[in-house]
Image 1 (spheres, rainbow, N blue to C red):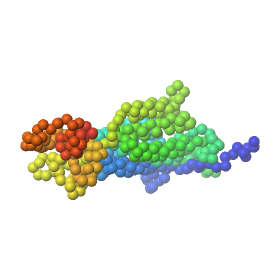
Image 2: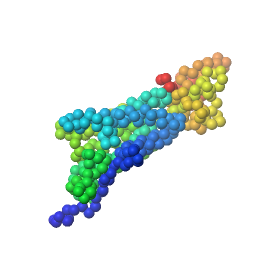
Image 3: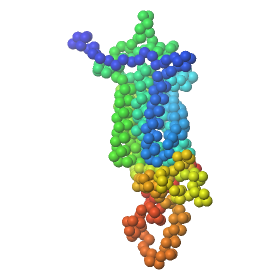
Image 4: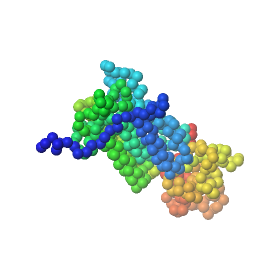
Length: 399
Protein backbone atom coordinates (compact mmCIF):
# COMPACT_ATOMS: atom_id res chain seq x y z
CA UNK A 1 0.00 0.00 0.00
CA UNK A 2 1.46 3.33 -1.04
CA UNK A 3 0.94 6.77 0.38
CA UNK A 4 -0.92 7.77 -2.78
CA UNK A 5 -3.45 4.96 -2.33
CA UNK A 6 -4.29 6.26 1.14
CA UNK A 7 -4.99 9.77 -0.13
CA UNK A 8 -8.72 10.47 -0.49
CA UNK A 9 -9.85 11.07 -4.05
CA UNK A 10 -12.49 13.58 -2.97
CA UNK A 11 -13.37 15.75 -0.02
CA UNK A 12 -16.00 18.22 1.11
CA UNK A 13 -14.63 21.75 1.50
CA UNK A 14 -15.44 24.03 4.40
CA UNK A 15 -15.96 27.79 4.21
CA UNK A 16 -13.11 30.01 5.36
CA UNK A 17 -15.46 32.82 6.33
CA UNK A 18 -18.58 32.73 8.48
CA UNK A 19 -19.04 36.48 8.92
CA UNK A 20 -19.47 39.20 6.33
CA UNK A 21 -19.58 42.91 6.96
CA UNK A 22 -22.46 44.94 5.60
CA UNK A 23 -21.05 48.32 6.50
CA UNK A 24 -20.88 48.35 10.30
CA UNK A 25 -23.31 45.41 10.59
CA UNK A 26 -21.84 41.89 10.72
CA UNK A 27 -23.83 39.23 8.88
CA UNK A 28 -23.16 35.90 10.58
CA UNK A 29 -23.83 32.70 8.70
CA UNK A 30 -24.82 30.85 11.86
CA UNK A 31 -27.49 33.42 12.72
CA UNK A 32 -28.77 33.53 9.14
CA UNK A 33 -29.16 29.75 9.10
CA UNK A 34 -31.06 29.82 12.40
CA UNK A 35 -33.38 32.54 11.09
CA UNK A 36 -33.94 30.65 7.84
CA UNK A 37 -34.81 27.53 9.83
CA UNK A 38 -37.31 29.47 11.93
CA UNK A 39 -38.97 30.79 8.77
CA UNK A 40 -39.27 27.26 7.37
CA UNK A 41 -40.81 25.97 10.61
CA UNK A 42 -43.29 28.87 10.71
CA UNK A 43 -44.42 28.30 7.12
CA UNK A 44 -45.00 24.59 7.69
CA UNK A 45 -46.74 25.15 11.02
CA UNK A 46 -48.98 27.91 9.62
CA UNK A 47 -50.15 25.62 6.83
CA UNK A 48 -50.86 22.74 9.19
CA UNK A 49 -52.63 24.93 11.75
CA UNK A 50 -54.94 26.30 9.09
CA UNK A 51 -55.75 22.73 7.99
CA UNK A 52 -56.91 22.14 11.56
CA UNK A 53 -59.11 25.25 11.67
CA UNK A 54 -56.85 27.87 13.24
CA UNK A 55 -57.24 31.41 11.91
CA UNK A 56 -54.56 32.69 9.48
CA UNK A 57 -51.56 34.35 11.07
CA UNK A 58 -51.77 32.55 14.41
CA UNK A 59 -48.28 31.13 13.94
CA UNK A 60 -46.84 34.65 14.15
CA UNK A 61 -48.49 35.19 17.53
CA UNK A 62 -47.02 31.88 18.67
CA UNK A 63 -43.57 32.60 17.23
CA UNK A 64 -43.37 35.95 19.03
CA UNK A 65 -43.29 33.97 22.28
CA UNK A 66 -41.78 30.64 21.24
CA UNK A 67 -38.75 31.87 19.28
CA UNK A 68 -37.19 34.10 21.99
CA UNK A 69 -37.88 31.61 24.78
CA UNK A 70 -36.56 28.81 22.58
CA UNK A 71 -33.29 30.64 21.88
CA UNK A 72 -32.89 31.51 25.55
CA UNK A 73 -33.55 27.91 26.56
CA UNK A 74 -31.12 26.61 23.93
CA UNK A 75 -28.34 28.88 25.11
CA UNK A 76 -28.95 28.13 28.78
CA UNK A 77 -28.72 24.39 28.10
CA UNK A 78 -25.48 24.82 26.18
CA UNK A 79 -23.86 27.00 28.84
CA UNK A 80 -25.01 24.80 31.74
CA UNK A 81 -23.76 21.60 30.09
CA UNK A 82 -20.47 23.16 28.91
CA UNK A 83 -19.60 25.61 31.69
CA UNK A 84 -15.80 25.31 31.47
CA UNK A 85 -15.62 27.41 28.32
CA UNK A 86 -17.32 30.31 30.07
CA UNK A 87 -16.65 29.95 33.80
CA UNK A 88 -13.61 27.64 33.99
CA UNK A 89 -9.96 28.56 34.04
CA UNK A 90 -9.30 31.05 31.27
CA UNK A 91 -13.01 31.21 30.43
CA UNK A 92 -14.89 34.36 29.53
CA UNK A 93 -18.33 34.68 31.19
CA UNK A 94 -19.38 37.31 28.66
CA UNK A 95 -18.99 34.71 25.91
CA UNK A 96 -22.06 33.01 27.34
CA UNK A 97 -24.09 35.65 25.48
CA UNK A 98 -22.24 35.26 22.16
CA UNK A 99 -24.76 32.97 20.48
CA UNK A 100 -23.52 34.04 17.03
CA UNK A 101 -20.36 32.01 17.66
CA UNK A 102 -22.41 28.81 17.98
CA UNK A 103 -23.69 26.85 20.92
CA UNK A 104 -27.45 26.26 21.00
CA UNK A 105 -28.72 23.04 22.57
CA UNK A 106 -31.78 21.58 20.87
CA UNK A 107 -32.99 20.14 24.19
CA UNK A 108 -33.12 23.60 25.74
CA UNK A 109 -34.63 25.04 22.56
CA UNK A 110 -37.56 22.60 22.65
CA UNK A 111 -38.13 23.11 26.39
CA UNK A 112 -37.91 26.90 26.19
CA UNK A 113 -39.95 27.07 23.02
CA UNK A 114 -42.64 24.89 24.58
CA UNK A 115 -43.00 27.37 27.42
CA UNK A 116 -43.40 30.26 24.98
CA UNK A 117 -45.79 28.29 22.77
CA UNK A 118 -47.89 27.39 25.82
CA UNK A 119 -48.20 31.05 26.79
CA UNK A 120 -49.22 32.04 23.25
CA UNK A 121 -51.58 29.09 22.81
CA UNK A 122 -53.30 29.93 26.09
CA UNK A 123 -53.85 33.50 24.92
CA UNK A 124 -55.24 32.33 21.59
CA UNK A 125 -57.40 29.57 23.09
CA UNK A 126 -55.60 26.81 21.16
CA UNK A 127 -54.68 23.52 22.85
CA UNK A 128 -50.91 23.15 23.08
CA UNK A 129 -51.13 19.64 21.61
CA UNK A 130 -52.61 21.08 18.41
CA UNK A 131 -49.69 23.50 18.11
CA UNK A 132 -47.16 20.74 18.84
CA UNK A 133 -48.60 18.37 16.24
CA UNK A 134 -48.69 21.15 13.63
CA UNK A 135 -45.05 21.96 14.38
CA UNK A 136 -43.85 18.33 14.39
CA UNK A 137 -42.59 18.05 10.78
CA UNK A 138 -41.50 21.69 10.55
CA UNK A 139 -39.11 21.51 13.49
CA UNK A 140 -36.76 18.88 12.01
CA UNK A 141 -36.74 20.84 8.75
CA UNK A 142 -35.69 23.92 10.72
CA UNK A 143 -32.97 21.92 12.45
CA UNK A 144 -31.66 20.67 9.11
CA UNK A 145 -31.34 24.23 7.83
CA UNK A 146 -29.79 25.42 11.08
CA UNK A 147 -27.08 22.74 10.93
CA UNK A 148 -25.60 24.52 7.91
CA UNK A 149 -24.42 27.14 10.38
CA UNK A 150 -22.10 24.54 11.92
CA UNK A 151 -20.55 24.00 8.50
CA UNK A 152 -19.76 27.70 8.17
CA UNK A 153 -18.32 27.72 11.69
CA UNK A 154 -16.14 24.65 11.01
CA UNK A 155 -17.53 22.89 14.09
CA UNK A 156 -19.37 19.77 15.26
CA UNK A 157 -17.49 17.30 13.13
CA UNK A 158 -16.56 13.71 13.89
CA UNK A 159 -13.41 11.61 13.79
CA UNK A 160 -10.92 11.13 10.97
CA UNK A 161 -12.08 9.36 7.81
CA UNK A 162 -10.93 8.55 4.27
CA UNK A 163 -14.46 8.42 2.85
CA UNK A 164 -15.15 10.50 -0.29
CA UNK A 165 -17.35 12.83 1.71
CA UNK A 166 -14.71 13.47 4.33
CA UNK A 167 -14.72 17.08 5.43
CA UNK A 168 -11.89 19.57 5.36
CA UNK A 169 -11.71 21.59 8.55
CA UNK A 170 -10.04 24.99 8.86
CA UNK A 171 -8.38 26.25 11.98
CA UNK A 172 -10.42 29.26 13.01
CA UNK A 173 -8.76 32.44 14.18
CA UNK A 174 -9.53 33.05 17.89
CA UNK A 175 -8.63 36.73 17.48
CA UNK A 176 -10.89 37.15 14.45
CA UNK A 177 -14.02 35.06 15.06
CA UNK A 178 -15.72 33.77 11.96
CA UNK A 179 -12.55 33.66 9.88
CA UNK A 180 -9.98 30.94 9.21
CA UNK A 181 -6.48 31.28 10.58
CA UNK A 182 -3.97 32.01 7.80
CA UNK A 183 -0.29 31.24 7.34
CA UNK A 184 2.50 33.57 6.30
CA UNK A 185 1.45 33.21 2.67
CA UNK A 186 -2.09 34.29 3.64
CA UNK A 187 -3.45 30.82 2.91
CA UNK A 188 -6.11 29.30 5.22
CA UNK A 189 -4.69 26.61 7.48
CA UNK A 190 -6.37 23.19 7.36
CA UNK A 191 -6.44 20.60 10.10
CA UNK A 192 -4.58 17.45 9.00
CA UNK A 193 -6.73 14.80 7.32
CA UNK A 194 -10.48 14.65 6.70
CA UNK A 195 -13.32 14.30 9.19
CA UNK A 196 -16.85 12.92 9.38
CA UNK A 197 -19.34 15.77 8.74
CA UNK A 198 -21.59 14.78 11.64
CA UNK A 199 -23.60 17.99 11.35
CA UNK A 200 -24.44 16.97 7.76
CA UNK A 201 -25.41 13.48 8.94
CA UNK A 202 -27.80 15.06 11.41
CA UNK A 203 -29.22 17.43 8.78
CA UNK A 204 -29.95 14.52 6.44
CA UNK A 205 -31.41 12.48 9.29
CA UNK A 206 -33.69 15.38 10.20
CA UNK A 207 -34.97 15.56 6.63
CA UNK A 208 -35.84 11.88 6.92
CA UNK A 209 -37.59 12.46 10.25
CA UNK A 210 -39.67 15.26 8.71
CA UNK A 211 -40.71 12.96 5.86
CA UNK A 212 -41.57 10.18 8.32
CA UNK A 213 -43.76 12.46 10.43
CA UNK A 214 -45.50 13.85 7.33
CA UNK A 215 -46.24 10.36 6.00
CA UNK A 216 -47.41 8.71 9.24
CA UNK A 217 -49.44 11.72 10.34
CA UNK A 218 -51.19 11.79 6.98
CA UNK A 219 -51.83 8.05 7.11
CA UNK A 220 -52.98 7.71 10.73
CA UNK A 221 -54.14 11.29 11.50
CA UNK A 222 -52.24 11.48 14.77
CA UNK A 223 -53.55 13.74 17.49
CA UNK A 224 -53.14 14.65 21.17
CA UNK A 225 -49.44 15.48 20.68
CA UNK A 226 -48.54 12.08 19.23
CA UNK A 227 -47.14 13.54 15.99
CA UNK A 228 -44.76 15.63 18.07
CA UNK A 229 -43.82 12.58 20.14
CA UNK A 230 -43.07 10.76 16.89
CA UNK A 231 -40.73 13.58 15.86
CA UNK A 232 -38.97 13.42 19.24
CA UNK A 233 -38.45 9.67 18.92
CA UNK A 234 -37.15 9.99 15.38
CA UNK A 235 -34.78 12.82 16.18
CA UNK A 236 -33.34 11.34 19.37
CA UNK A 237 -32.79 7.95 17.70
CA UNK A 238 -30.54 9.66 15.17
CA UNK A 239 -28.93 12.02 17.62
CA UNK A 240 -27.91 9.04 19.77
CA UNK A 241 -25.61 7.44 17.19
CA UNK A 242 -24.47 10.74 15.65
CA UNK A 243 -23.45 12.02 19.09
CA UNK A 244 -21.24 8.96 19.52
CA UNK A 245 -19.29 10.01 16.41
CA UNK A 246 -18.56 13.57 17.48
CA UNK A 247 -15.13 14.50 18.77
CA UNK A 248 -15.70 18.04 20.04
CA UNK A 249 -15.29 18.65 23.75
CA UNK A 250 -18.21 17.60 25.92
CA UNK A 251 -18.89 16.58 29.49
CA UNK A 252 -19.18 12.84 30.00
CA UNK A 253 -21.08 10.55 32.35
CA UNK A 254 -19.81 6.97 32.75
CA UNK A 255 -17.65 7.44 29.68
CA UNK A 256 -20.45 8.65 27.39
CA UNK A 257 -21.15 12.18 26.23
CA UNK A 258 -23.89 13.93 28.17
CA UNK A 259 -26.04 14.34 25.07
CA UNK A 260 -25.96 10.58 24.46
CA UNK A 261 -27.67 10.06 27.82
CA UNK A 262 -30.06 12.93 27.14
CA UNK A 263 -31.05 11.50 23.76
CA UNK A 264 -31.72 8.08 25.27
CA UNK A 265 -33.81 9.37 28.15
CA UNK A 266 -35.84 11.74 25.97
CA UNK A 267 -36.49 8.92 23.49
CA UNK A 268 -37.88 6.70 26.26
CA UNK A 269 -40.10 9.52 27.53
CA UNK A 270 -41.48 10.22 24.05
CA UNK A 271 -42.08 6.51 23.44
CA UNK A 272 -44.05 6.17 26.68
CA UNK A 273 -46.17 9.20 25.77
CA UNK A 274 -46.79 7.90 22.24
CA UNK A 275 -47.92 4.49 23.50
CA UNK A 276 -50.06 5.69 26.40
CA UNK A 277 -51.86 8.65 24.83
CA UNK A 278 -54.74 7.87 22.49
CA UNK A 279 -57.37 9.88 20.70
CA UNK A 280 -58.29 11.25 17.27
CA UNK A 281 -56.76 14.30 15.69
CA UNK A 282 -58.11 17.53 17.13
CA UNK A 283 -59.80 20.10 14.89
CA UNK A 284 -60.84 23.59 15.90
CA UNK A 285 -63.87 25.75 15.19
CA UNK A 286 -63.39 29.47 15.96
CA UNK A 287 -65.60 31.06 18.57
CA UNK A 288 -66.40 34.56 17.25
CA UNK A 289 -66.11 37.62 19.43
CA UNK A 290 -69.49 38.83 20.82
CA UNK A 291 -69.55 41.70 18.33
CA UNK A 292 -69.64 39.30 15.42
CA UNK A 293 -72.79 37.52 16.65
CA UNK A 294 -76.36 38.63 15.90
CA UNK A 295 -77.59 41.55 17.97
CA UNK A 296 -79.33 40.61 21.17
CA UNK A 297 -78.32 36.97 21.25
CA UNK A 298 -75.28 37.45 23.46
CA UNK A 299 -72.91 36.24 20.77
CA UNK A 300 -74.10 32.62 20.95
CA UNK A 301 -71.83 30.78 18.50
CA UNK A 302 -74.53 28.24 17.75
CA UNK A 303 -76.70 31.01 16.27
CA UNK A 304 -74.10 32.56 13.94
CA UNK A 305 -75.17 32.33 10.29
CA UNK A 306 -72.31 30.80 8.36
CA UNK A 307 -74.41 29.32 5.58
CA UNK A 308 -72.88 31.61 2.99
CA UNK A 309 -69.22 30.96 3.66
CA UNK A 310 -69.03 28.25 6.30
CA UNK A 311 -66.41 30.31 8.14
CA UNK A 312 -66.20 33.00 10.77
CA UNK A 313 -65.68 36.62 9.76
CA UNK A 314 -62.09 37.09 8.55
CA UNK A 315 -62.03 40.66 9.85
CA UNK A 316 -62.33 39.81 13.54
CA UNK A 317 -59.97 37.42 15.36
CA UNK A 318 -61.79 34.62 17.15
CA UNK A 319 -62.25 34.83 20.91
CA UNK A 320 -61.15 31.22 21.18
CA UNK A 321 -61.72 27.81 19.66
CA UNK A 322 -63.89 24.76 20.19
CA UNK A 323 -62.29 21.36 19.81
CA UNK A 324 -64.31 19.06 17.53
CA UNK A 325 -63.81 15.82 15.66
CA UNK A 326 -63.12 15.50 11.95
CA UNK A 327 -66.73 14.88 10.96
CA UNK A 328 -67.95 17.98 12.77
CA UNK A 329 -65.10 20.04 11.34
CA UNK A 330 -65.88 18.90 7.79
CA UNK A 331 -69.56 19.79 8.22
CA UNK A 332 -68.57 23.22 9.49
CA UNK A 333 -66.15 23.86 6.63
CA UNK A 334 -68.37 22.58 3.83
CA UNK A 335 -71.88 23.53 4.95
CA UNK A 336 -71.44 25.97 7.82
CA UNK A 337 -73.01 23.47 10.26
CA UNK A 338 -71.99 24.17 13.83
CA UNK A 339 -72.27 21.33 16.38
CA UNK A 340 -74.23 22.07 19.50
CA UNK A 341 -72.09 23.42 22.30
CA UNK A 342 -72.00 21.13 25.36
CA UNK A 343 -74.55 22.30 27.94
CA UNK A 344 -76.26 24.71 25.51
CA UNK A 345 -79.50 25.89 27.29
CA UNK A 346 -81.17 26.52 23.94
CA UNK A 347 -80.56 22.94 22.93
CA UNK A 348 -82.00 21.72 26.23
CA UNK A 349 -85.12 23.92 25.80
CA UNK A 350 -85.66 22.71 22.26
CA UNK A 351 -85.30 19.13 23.43
CA UNK A 352 -87.75 19.59 26.30
CA UNK A 353 -90.24 21.40 24.09
CA UNK A 354 -90.29 18.65 21.52
CA UNK A 355 -90.99 16.04 24.17
CA UNK A 356 -93.76 18.05 25.91
CA UNK A 357 -95.53 19.02 22.70
CA UNK A 358 -95.54 15.61 21.06
CA UNK A 359 -97.27 12.91 23.13
CA UNK A 360 -96.06 10.30 20.66
CA UNK A 361 -92.51 10.93 21.77
CA UNK A 362 -93.11 10.88 25.56
CA UNK A 363 -92.36 7.18 25.79
CA UNK A 364 -89.49 7.22 23.29
CA UNK A 365 -86.31 5.68 24.73
CA UNK A 366 -83.79 8.28 25.77
CA UNK A 367 -80.77 6.02 25.95
CA UNK A 368 -78.35 6.95 23.18
CA UNK A 369 -77.88 3.28 22.26
CA UNK A 370 -81.64 2.90 21.56
CA UNK A 371 -81.98 5.96 19.31
CA UNK A 372 -82.06 5.58 15.54
CA UNK A 373 -78.72 6.23 13.85
CA UNK A 374 -79.99 9.54 12.49
CA UNK A 375 -80.37 10.94 16.01
CA UNK A 376 -76.61 11.21 16.27
CA UNK A 377 -76.27 13.79 13.53
CA UNK A 378 -75.23 16.62 15.84
CA UNK A 379 -78.50 18.65 15.53
CA UNK A 380 -79.89 17.94 19.01
CA UNK A 381 -79.01 16.74 22.47
CA UNK A 382 -77.46 13.59 21.01
CA UNK A 383 -75.20 15.76 18.90
CA UNK A 384 -74.24 17.72 21.99
CA UNK A 385 -73.37 14.51 23.83
CA UNK A 386 -71.43 13.32 20.86
CA UNK A 387 -69.58 16.57 20.56
CA UNK A 388 -68.57 16.46 24.19
CA UNK A 389 -67.62 12.80 24.10
CA UNK A 390 -65.66 12.98 20.84
CA UNK A 391 -63.60 16.01 21.59
CA UNK A 392 -66.38 18.64 21.43
CA UNK A 393 -65.04 20.62 24.35
CA UNK A 394 -64.59 24.36 24.31
CA UNK A 395 -61.49 26.45 24.87
CA UNK A 396 -61.31 30.19 24.86
CA UNK A 397 -58.89 33.00 25.52
CA UNK A 398 -59.32 32.84 29.29
CA UNK A 399 -59.21 29.06 29.67
